[in-house]
Image 1 (cartoon, helix red, strand yellow):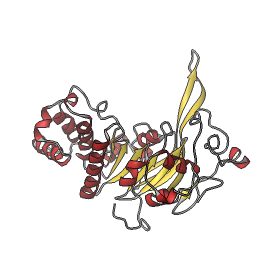
Image 2 (cartoon, rainbow, N blue to C red):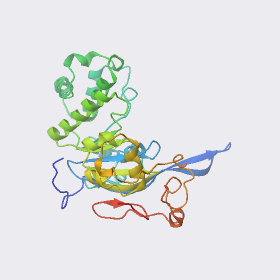
Image 3 (spheres, helix red, strand yellow):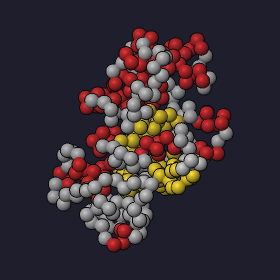
Image 4 (tube, rainbow, N blue to C red):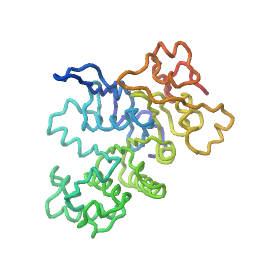
Length: 329
């Protein structure tokens, strides 16, 4: 993204009070006895050309959020407004058209690629399904996109199992990119790759963003990658966003105890945190089927007080938002 301010810009994506609950069923008649609150009321916007990173521990609802946005797993409540249109209100044909502009890259490229199809056919399929190219044009478009993501034309005749993990992720990127989308949800696209390959894929994503004016929602559980690629970071815990700010502000002045704990959990050189008291999390993430009363983080927070156990803090602040009764910094 160009580093200009997003003020006065219209968001390309707006998420309002997004919730995704899964029913818990028991008994012979599968009676609903509870709900898993995977995503529990998210509000954020993404602006054209920027990368918003969604960061948190495994099980916090990051991937569920991404799938809900692209309507692979429609939300229980809330709105997803993409380019001025609410996704849930679209008809089948309208949603199909919108998906050409809204794509997703999956965490595990192998499981998302049909092992029985050659790569050329996998990349041609979206073009033919959405009728975005004549059959005579498809072959060239496939060759072009393979070259763009750093693969060769002869790779089109191979099957997914004949590629390395990094190459398969490039194929996943090519499949999303071939429809010329405006926004791509990157669901932990480098978490399953070796460190050296992670750097290559991140560089590729940055180059593609610049060349094709792309917007990213970049989902990750680590802060190392997102520091390099993101413009803003949203920290997620137990289905909620607890802190949202520009990337440099998150690293220089983290205000939520959970964010500070995440920063201390990774070997990231950060002189701004050198003199800060180290915050160490204890225990596990609470069960989203039975979340704690009050602030969801209070069961692991060394700074928690009585109010934290009773009241849910709202996400407040303009440029640096934080959901905490006693924000630090």
